[in-house]
Amino acid sequence: MPDLNTFHEFLPDILRIVRIPLIIVGGYILIRLLKAVIQKMRGEIVKRMKSRHAGPDIEIEKRGKTISDVLYKASAATLWVVVVMMVLREFGFDIGPILAGAGIVGLAVGFGAQNLVRDIISGLFLIIENQIRENDVAVINGTGGLVEEVNLRTTVLRGLDGTVHIFPNGAITTLSNMTRQFSYYLFDLGVAYKEDTDRVVKVIKEVGATMLDDPEYAPFITEPIEVLGVDKFADSAVIIKARIKTEPVKQWMVGRELNRRFKKRFDELGIEIPFPHHTLYFGEVSRPFKLEFQDTQKEGLREIVREVIREMHAEKATGDPPRLPSANEGK
Image 1 (cartoon, rainbow, N blue to C red):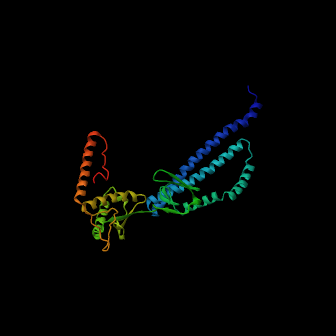
Image 2 (image 1 turned 135 degrees about the horizontal axis):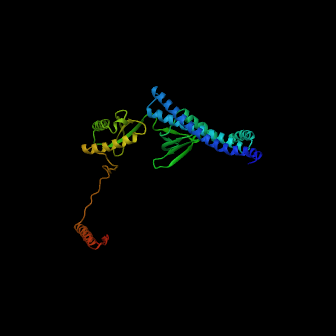
Image 3 (image 1 turned 120 degrees about the vertical axis):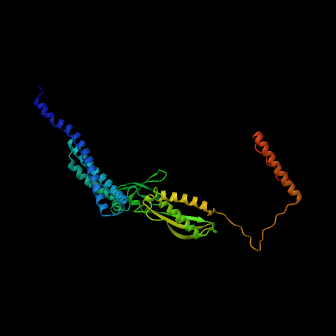
């Protein structure tokens, strides 16, 4: 029969071995419960904001997701710190001096890590002022992309080519949110100078109306196309500016489809979309000079053309490239 004194001697160690996994498992369970509670709170907050008509549903959803994610990350980090302290105490460490030392170190780090503090404070204002949310499309410091994460310290964008851009919140100097509440797609339609601009404007509105009748695109369009008028006279075209209002993030999909329909309709009606070109004008003083060939020169040019044709036929038969005659051979 085991000695009871020996058992009592090892009992604290046995209990410690049991408590440490329980603390870790308990911390994990608490974090999962915390996540579920935050998600439920998020759903309730979103529901109440929708009932008060605080904005479009998609905007409310994005704001709720951003706030809940930040709250969960901060709470989970705090809980894990508590779990680590409890485990250290089970190993026999006196956590009182550790906490006191952490406070002093934290104060020293606070003075030295001013950029970190600035990033966190800036991140709080980004979230509180609702400047940017997850799934927005934004331009930060001149770099655009889809907002994947809004953290207390950093904001993460993913570019169209898949590149991930990470910005410390304190280093954000310019922020342009392209998808807050609604979006516009802007058109600069160039037509030839000979075209009747009133007719072109009428065609633009007709094409825009077909989008509203299309069940595939109509749900994403909030207002009919708006023609702003003749914007400028470019080198080779008259520029007509227009825009269409859409749901957030949908402006590019609607705009590309409209561009396709504009091109197709303009081709059907013979409306010219010009390409850049230059016209040379010599004026009355410097008239264009006239080129004349003598009979011998004309015959030489004809012989060069005949020789090129013969060489091309020979190339088809042998596979060798044609030999171009030199400039002196036709003289």
